[in-house]
Image (cartoon, rainbow, N blue to C red; front, side, top):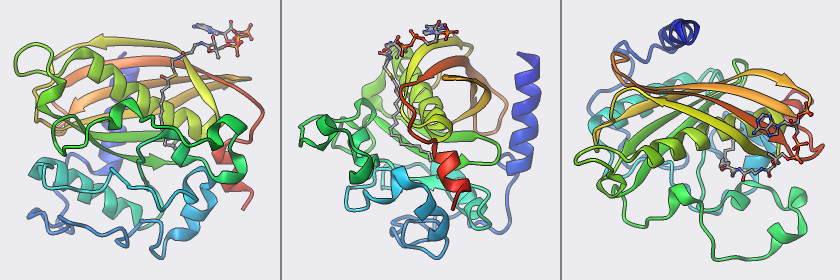
Length: 258
Ligand SMILES: CCCCCCCC/C=C\CCCCCCCC(=O)SCCNC(=O)CCNC(=O)[C@H](O)C(C)(C)COP(=O)(O)OP(=O)(O)OC[C@H]1O[C@@H](n2cnc3c(N)ncnc32)[C@H](O)[C@@H]1OP(=O)(O)O
């Protein structure tokens, strides 16, 4: 656990998440950011995007991970900070569609995935902005690390005023899962172990910080911490095992071969 705390502290230090960045506006100037902003699929850094095959062919779907009016100033500030860090390619903003199938390009879809279905990703099941899961993910490929900026809305309540533990588990599973997908392609959660340390107030913003610790054959071991954006409060920490489902090349292999 201590090792993870140190890793997180170092990692956040590298990312400058905890320090104000004078280059980034603190007044939310990117509110209403268009999909053509830096690191979006159509921006100049799209070379990187094009190599992330799983993500590059679903651009017509609504991207829920763009700022909306429900995002707090804290969420906007953190989002802008990570967008800045996308500019040199260290981090990549990961779009978020309503269905996991929308992330898969047609050429890689399995037969059942080609059928139109009225299903939705659990974490994107509410239409009204701000009521449920508001989140955006950023990937650091070289560190095999995925972070998620998460603002739980009022319909995720467990105890009065706090996020339900199941919603925390969902956002951890999704973040860790995205990280596992990056290294191993199609995966499923085999084990997820969470220690809840401090409740997450509804409407607050937390940083879910996950990374791949080890890959052994089809097994991908990951760990994760959920912290307040000032880094002072540890809300939860988790470990997970994901199992690769088939021999499809990982996104990481695809990216390095281009
Ligand atoms: C560029 C970045 C891209 C990012 C993309 C972002 C966009 C992403 C979009 C959207 C992201 C959404 C992300 C969502 C994530 C959510 C994921 C879920 O919630 S998944 C639902 C819950 N999980 C299940 O329902 C699984 C149920 N279990 C199973 O189906 C099977 O048990 C399965 C597939 C996990 C394994 O079954 P087998 O038959 O394939 O494999 P066997 O032989 O059983 O196990 C392989 C090895 O793993 C060990 N193993 C399996 N389960 C284990 C366990 N629970 N604990 C320890 N070891 C286990 C075994 O002992 C074996 O090890 P030995 O090879 O013998 O050494």
